Length: 48
Image 1 (tube, rainbow, N blue to C red):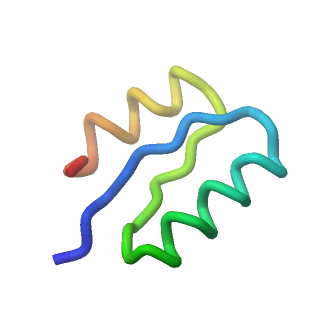
Image 2 (image 1 turned 30 degrees about the horizontal axis):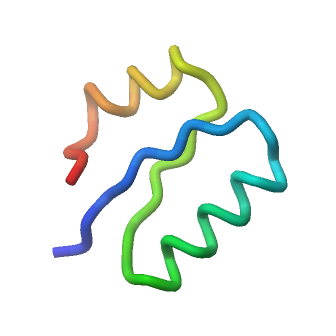
Image 3 (image 1 turned 90 degrees about the vertical axis):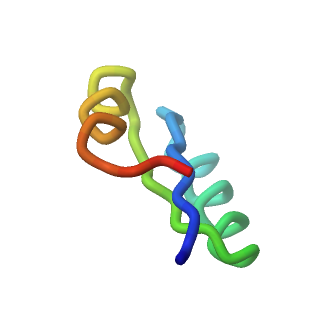
């Protein structure tokens, strides 16, 4: 099972960098650009 990691970042370039890096290492990134959105994602997705 692929492990999920929640990313909270409001800078698009940084978000893409984190996303690509995590995918390269076999993780499933769950991107969010705000704290409120991050909480919604955390409540509805299993975070590893």
